[in-house]
Length: 252
Image (cartoon, rainbow, N blue to C red):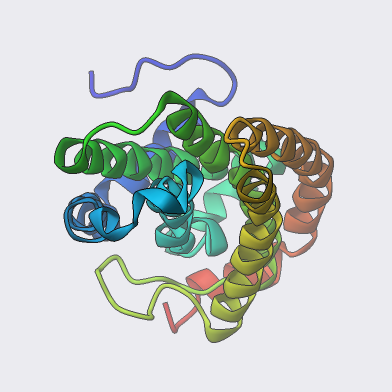
């Protein structure tokens, strides 16, 4: 049939969330625009960085797109329930653990971000050539390491400040102003945290510090996410009524 070949307790939830994301017009537009932007940067911007700036500085555009993939997909992890509308009631009527719901939504948002990152990297490599192996490893660790911090914060924002989101490419319609500000703060904090290995690598002229530093921060992020998930699940269960009122109400 049309079912996805994934197994386990989360399989139905992952399939549902994956189809939501893949079918959304925003995801389609991002899949076209972000890789094209990466190719443009590799063609016009990267060659302007002088050799004497150092290999770490020359790798910054790649790291930038690793982070930008998360920024571009903010509507999916800052307003995770916004697309549900009346279907949101299913989560509370079915015997589904709230933590599993959050994990499935997080996985779908992360996989979209990963796909954008891989596509933008491939587009950049096709135009500007492949960077050193340490830079690729660092970018992969950066993208993966940022995710748990953003998703943990996004779960709380999604639950506390939900908004019915249009199933269209509507500028500014997918997030409330409060969520936009919160998302900016979360992204800025994450960028600041992951800038520390970059500054150390530039100062010490040790490129290997980047993948190592990003991986260490990613491990910390995984611990933060794991610790926050039960609390977020309890918050979701406690805020069932206001969340449903927001996403299923008349303004939806």
